[in-house]
Structure formats: structure tokens, C-alpha cells
Image 1 (spheres, rainbow over the protein chains, first blue to last red):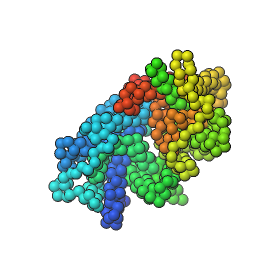
Image 2: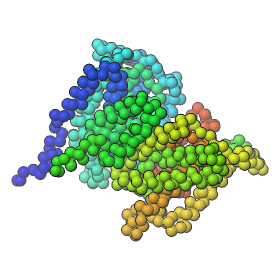
Image 3: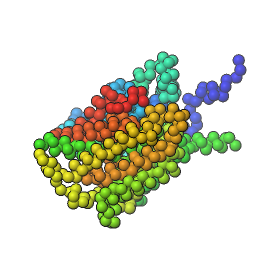
Image 4: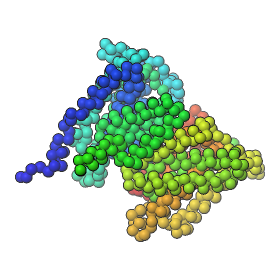
Length: 328
Length: 287
């Protein structure tokens, strides 16, 4: 037998950890030390990374384009909020679990109904599902607080030892970082597992996956539910960290925002969520402070340039540069 | 009587939805291009129309014509210079590009005109009420309904009875086949894109009275335009017409009858409809 082809060799080692994969976490800890006054913003970034990561699982790997992912972020957020406000259930870790279960159940149910469609129809169906949840949260105001939401929620210390830090967000930042790390490991294991490979197969060639007998619908629905559960965890961390929940957690703005963030960073590559969230949010934060009226100009031009020149986001641009470099 | 006047109000807003969305449906059906900036063209047109009337003293019809021409010209430039580079790109890159374009449009309008909402100065002959015999109703809404119906007829004739319409229909149904028969789909697309953007501009101006006009317009109504296109079926002029009227009327009537429910019913109905008929009213199955 001859030596394996380079492509085969590449496939056999692609799941192995690379040295640079430690960098984001080192950077996350370094930011904790370097920017003690920006930890509230940093926590928001971490939550957004987790949210974008959950979207990457369905969009980047399973190829399901959705415009309603904030439905699950919101489901998780409201679960934690309502448990705390009405039942006094303020233990954070079990709250995360409850949020994941509720959001995952919503994902399982809606995925089972909606994933028989695709394209524009699926886009609109996911959008409508999210809008229905939003209107429901608005109408049942005795439970959800309606338009104003539920302000000033407080949660028990994490593991009974680490108090939430209302002023400087130190605990919240590390908490969000730890949750993100756990979820990231889960997603990473998942996408390189046979399950993840079959999702990629469905994305690349639906007909062939049907032909080889893969349970296409079931795989898609399962991926959708897992992604929904992770988005719910992101929403739950958001509420626990900030201590409030309102209608903005499940609006179109949040759903479109996370979609843009993921495409900007690069989908289907795990780290696109990190790059996209950091670039987008830092750009938005600094531009809106410096130019309160015209900040969208810079943001819009960035998005247009990336779309025109960087096929598959900022990380895609990095790939193209590296290929050109090694071709020399 | 009340029911009829509510229905007329709904029809008028449905007509506005139709005029704005029809171009989006055809361009999406033709190239599969996800153009989320379509509402932006409507907004730019609305501003051109309102501002040219206020500052240059143009009459309402002249301003509408100017808005149509200006936005159609702008869209041709954008299409040739920027959109054309993305036809072969993934639809997600198209989403990123067009959302970026919307942000740029919003910022430009905010900088140039300001964030406040604009009002249209209707000419006196449209501002009053018209006696229909059995009912007096706002002249402007009646004019909108007439305009939309005429436009629908013109577009229908253009689509069904002219050579260029036949080419567009052929390209929507099967682009590769049309291309191998010698139809220049690229040029066809530039033409429909310009026409669609121009119509959106007119819709932005005509509808400013109903939908309002401010820099956030393209994002606020994006979902509505997309719902109309999805319910009508991609690339179907008649589909967009009936979908727009249906949604306009239902939205109007339900908001009047059940003010607490807000927009909930529209989303619920769209959900039910698209689950039952994923290809839209007149769309082709499997398209």
C-alpha cells in the first residue's frame, strides 16, 4: 500500500488541538488584568461570542440559515429571569441548566416543525417564530414584565462562594469566560465527531446524504436543538451578569446582529464567532462613542469591504493571505 | 360602513407594500440575490421626493418621477460597481454586504438630513375627502389604491405581453436554460434591478404618509417586505400583489380590532401560511 494522500493525512489530524488554540483563552485572561474598567463590556463580548458560537453550529456546520436565533437567547434569558422573579430560584448554575433545557425544548419543537423548509421560507419562518415569542413576552406582562421587562434581579453567589460584582463585573467576566470555555469544548468535540461530520455532509450535498441513508431531518433537528440550548445558556449568562431582562433579548436586532457578527468573523470555523464578536463590538463601541450620529457609516463600510474582498469573513481573508504566501 | 373604511385603509397600505416589494421579489427570483438593502432604496427615494418638494417646490407627481429616476440611476451604478461582484458569492456574503449598505444609507441620511422623521406636504387636491356616493373617504388613500392597481396592471401587461417580460419569466423559472437560449440574464438583471429600486423609491414617497419616513425605515420594515415576498412566491408579480394586499388589509384590520395583539397576528398567519405552502402563493414547488 502506498503512503496516504495529503488530504487523508490532513483529515486524520484536523481535530487535534493546535498550539494557537490556547491564545483566545490567554487573551481573555490577559484582558481581565489589562482592562479592569471595561469588564462589563468584556462580559457582553463573551456572551455574544457564545451566542455566535451556537449559531455557528447550525449555520456554519449544518448549513441552516436562520434569522430567528435570538428566540433561543431570549428563551434562556426569560427562563432565568422568571425563575428568579417569581419563584426566587436564584442559584446561577442550576439556572443555566434550566435555561438550556427550556431553550433546547423550544429549539427541538420549532426545528421539528420548521426544518422541512429551506431558503427564504425558512428564513421567514424562523423570523416569525421569534416575533411570536417576542409578542408573547410583551403580552403576558404579569409574568414577563411586558415592555419594561424585569429590572434589578439578583442572583446567589456562584457555587456559593463567588458573589456577583455589581460595580466592576469581575466575577461576571470570569464566570462568562468559564461558561464559554465549557460550551466551546462541547461544540468543538461535537463538530469533529461523526455527528458533526454528517452535519457538514448535509450542508455540502443534501441529496448524497439522503442517498447514503443518513437520517438527515433528525440530524438537523438535533443540531438545531443543541444550538438552541447553547444560545439559551448565553441568554441566561447575560441576565445573571447584568441583572435585568427585557424585550431586546429576543428582537430582530439581536438576531440580525449575531448573524452579521458570525458572517463577519467567518462561519463554519469555530473561531469566527470570537473574531466577529470582538471586531464588531469594539468597532461599534468606539465608533458610537466618538461619532454618535455617524458611527453606522464606519461599521457599514467595514461590513461591505469584508463582504466584497474577504469571502467567508475576516478569517477567510486570513486563509487567502496564507495561501498566497505559501504559493510563493 | 366602518368595515368598509377599515378595508380601504388596509388596501391603501397594502398598495404601498406592493409598490415597494415588487422589485425585491423579481430581483430575488431572478438572481437569487438576497438584497436586504431594498428598503434602503425606498427610504432614499422617499427623502428625494420629500426634500425636492420642500426645497425646489416640485409638484408631487414631478417629485415622484424625480425620485424614481434618481434612485433607479443610483441603483444601476451600485449594481454594476458592487452588487455584480457578489453574484457568485455565497448568500451569506450577500447578506453581509447589503446590511452594510443599509447601515451606510442610514448614516448618510442621518448626517445629511437629520434623525427626525419627515412629513410629506400633500397637494391640496389629494389632502381632502372624496365622496364615493355611499361613503366619504380620504382622497389620498383612494389615490393610492388607484395608483397601485394601475401599476399592477401595467406590470402584469409588461410581464405577460412583452418580449422582455417573457425573458424575465423564463430566467426566473430556469436561469441556465434561459441563458443557453441566448437571454443575457446579466443585462436583464440590471434592468429589473433599476426598475425595482425605482418603484421602491416611488413607494417610499407615496407611503411616507402611512409608513412614515426616517433613517430607521429600511430596518423597521425589512421584515414586512420579506414576508410579502415569501408569501407571494419569489419572482411572481401577481403573487406579490395579492400577498401585499392580504397582509396590508389583515394587519390594518387586526390592529384596529385587537390593538393589544399588535403585530402578533401577522406573524402567526405568515407562519401558518408558509408551513402549509412553503413556496408561497404562486411560487413553483421545489423552486
